[in-house]
Amino acid sequence: MEILVAKTAGFCFGVKKAIEKAFNENGERIFTYGPIIHNKQVVDELKNRGIDVIENLDNIQPNDKIIIRSHGISKSEYEKIEQSGAIIVDATCPYVKHIHKIVEQKYNDGYKIVIVGDENHPEVKGINGWCKNTAIIINDIEDLNKVDKNIGKICIVAQTTFNQNKWYKISAELIKYAKEILIYNTICSATDERQNEAIELSKKVDIMIVIGGKNSSNSRKLYEICSDNCKKAIFIEDENELDLEEIKSAQRVGITAGASTPEYTIKAVIDKVDTLNKVVENKYEINNKEEIDYGFKNLSVGEIVEGKVIHITNDEVFLI
Image (tube, rainbow, N blue to C red):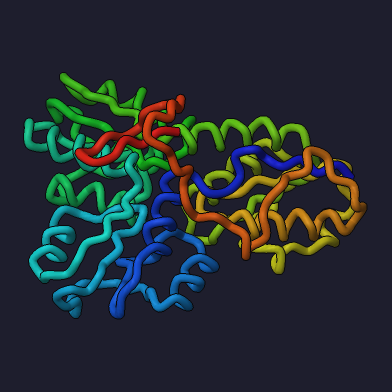
C-alpha cells in the first residue's frame, strides 16, 4: 500500500498563533470565549492547564483573562468584555480580523454586506457583528433568493474556510444583482492551497482519509472535496475512529487534515495505516505530542527573512 500525505495537512498560521497565545497565558481565572479552535484534543489540553471554555459573557469578572478564539467575535461582544474590566487576549486569526475591518468600513460607507459562508459558524456570526448583524448570509446558490435584485451597492466577503469553487459561482451570480459591487475574496491562502492539494491528491488514490473535528468547517469542506474526486472518502477525528478493514484492500491511500488538527493526531493516523504494510511513501515527519512546539521562529535584531506580509498591526507584522 502506498500512503500519500498532503503537505498542507494540519495547523494553519492563524490556528498556530491562537494556540501559542493560549498556551502562553498564566493566571487564576483564564477562559476561552468558545473553543479556541475546533479540535477537542487541544481544548481538553487547555482545560488540563486550567483554561476552560465559556459560552457567554454574563459572569465574567474584572481581571479575568478572556481569550478570543481564532474565529473572532462581534464588535458588541468585544466591547462587553472591555466594559466588564476583564483582560482581553485576542487570538483572532489575522485573516478574520482583516474581514472585520472591511465589513465595518464598507457598512459605514453605505454598502449592504453579503457574507458568503455558513450562518451558523462562529466566524460568520462574528463577521456579521461588525455590520450590526445586518448582513445577508449566503451558503449556496439557492440562498440568492435572499437578495433583492434592486439592492443598490453591495460588498461581498467570504468565510475564510469557504469552498473556493462555490465562492466563484456565488460571486458571479451576485454581480447580476447590484448596480455597484465590491468583491473581496477573503478565503485565506492556506485554505485555498489546502483545498487545491486535496483535489489533486484525492484524484490519485483509492481511498482518501480526512482528519478533523466534526464541527470544523474547513475539515468538512475537505471531506466534501475528496468525496467528489475519490471513490471513497473517510472523515475521522483521530486514529481511534479509523477502521483498518475499510482501507486494507486499497493500493493507494491519501491523507489530509483540517487546519485545526494537531500534528500528533495526523501522525497517529499515519502510523495506524502504516501497520498494514510498514511501507510509507513521502514519509510525513512529525514530532511526538510531547515535543510539539506551539511557538514561532525567534528572530534576532538585524536578521533578514523573506516572506509574504499578510497582516500589519501597530506592534507586529505577520509573514508566511
